[in-house]
Image (tube, rainbow over all chains, first blue to last red; front, side, top):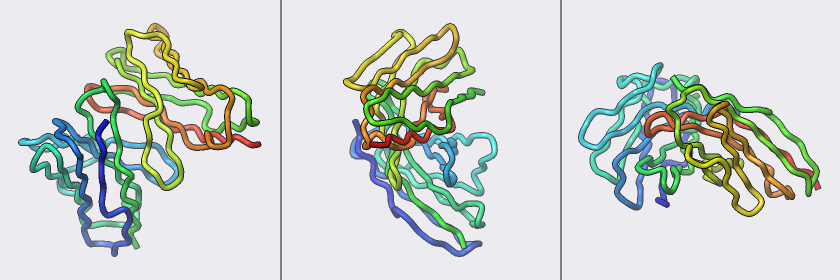
Amino acid sequence: SAVISQKPSRDICQRGTSLTIQCQVDSQVTMMFWYRQQPGQSLTLIATANQGSEATYESGFVIDKFPISRPNLTFSTLTVSNMSPEDSSIYLCSDGDSPNYGYTFGSGTRLTVV
Amino acid sequence: GENVEQHPSTLSVQEGDSAVIKCTYSDSASNYFPWYKQELGKGPQLIIDIRSNVGEKKDQRIAVTLNKTAKHFSLHITETQPEDSAVYFCAASRGTALIFGKGTTLSVSS
């Protein structure tokens, strides 16, 4: 299975600012996913990051708030824009190319907005 | 869209006992059902998965069963150990994405 590195691992940010989270996969994958996990809650899919095209967002998530880049088959970024305390969560990326070996998650970015 | 229900939300067992977590899903097109274990401060780790053409799968102390007709699947952990204590999430595929249940906090006391 793939190995996924995420950074930063944690950050404390001021409201109104933006944070870009990076996700690096050790092999080429066609699809990557971004999830949000609010404190003590489950994982909610934010969007699917497609290489060469715009990300596909789930209901309740918009590109202006969560712009995503996917410049190549091993890398993606998620930006949390104009942050408010409600954005305090763990943000996780995963690969999703093939269920033959499961979907691997990064270790997450723990974001606190103050 | 796909909806995944998971029960119970918390489960406490004695070391050596078995633990069972159950999930139901709504989308009959779902064909992949993984289970993840998440320890404090870490990302989810895949522990076992099952596909729709299989009814049961086992890996040492962990087994998963799937009933496609009833749209439910279960995780069975036998001979539980304190290191099994964690949050467990079931998930069901929706296309290539995964939709997660709300999680079960398993506590194994020695």
